[in-house]
Image 1 (cartoon, rainbow, N blue to C red):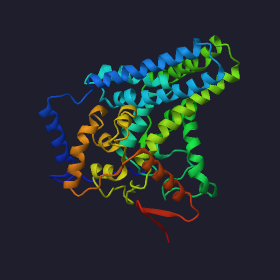
Image 2: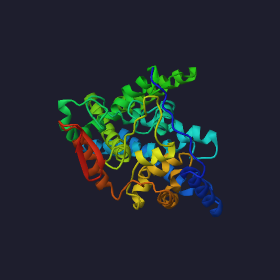
Image 3: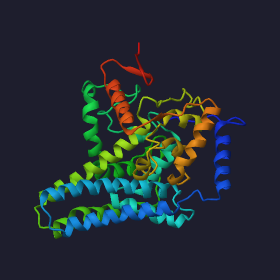
Image 4: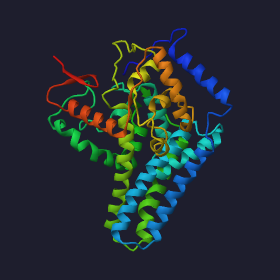
Length: 373
């Protein structure tokens, strides 16, 4: 049985208490809600409209195969944007102040092939608590045995090439999510150190909404489109390659880059730092000055703010980032940030290369890789 990991209690006048006070005061001074604003509702409407428009064009458009293939990839990318911009906030309870609205919007997650209940456990509860802690945070178990991202994982000979094959695997991860991951996470005994006990209704939801997804994305195209069955299968795979690569890259660039750490508890399960300081060490932002990145990625390019304030709608992250950055500086804490998407991608590539190298390596900082003796 795994020892439960524990964070030390924060001290009086600590970083997180001061940060929350400053952020709360900022919202009070501006007289605005921490939840969605009209811009957020516009984004939600836009991405849902794009999904249905592309879906119906594919089904009824009588288009040539090349156009259908391109639209399938675009539909997959739009599915990722729906997950980023609507479902992620809704499942965190930050989209709306109404629990019913958040629950309703979280159900859209079924539309992209994922189960919101399982996501809430693996992401909201486990990942947000035990970020980058090997053996606890299953969000960093990208492809166990195939991709190695920290020194605690065993090293295999084939992983010396992982910086090249990892990216196609991110695309396949979406297919795995639809057909395997949700079922596996639901029925395994525990996720990290958390026991898996589920309400009866969630068994029904898991199978019913998976079946509905298979019907809408596989069976209905087979019934209505004038194409061969194998062409529908190829289109479905292309959709998930677009969805998987988009989702995989965004999540990995926030936690698996050279700036982030993978701390471990001691033999008694105790972490060295308080939870908020741990989040600052294990999370990194990228493209924070890009309005386009913030618009399309649902604020997931600003993971520091998201991990510290998951109950605040992502539409506010760019503003509160100024407060978080200054408070971190005041408490002498690092604010991990890659200036662009490409710089974050290059950093992720380098850490994959280092972790797959024949000699085990320890990431010390952005510029230094030292061998372990």
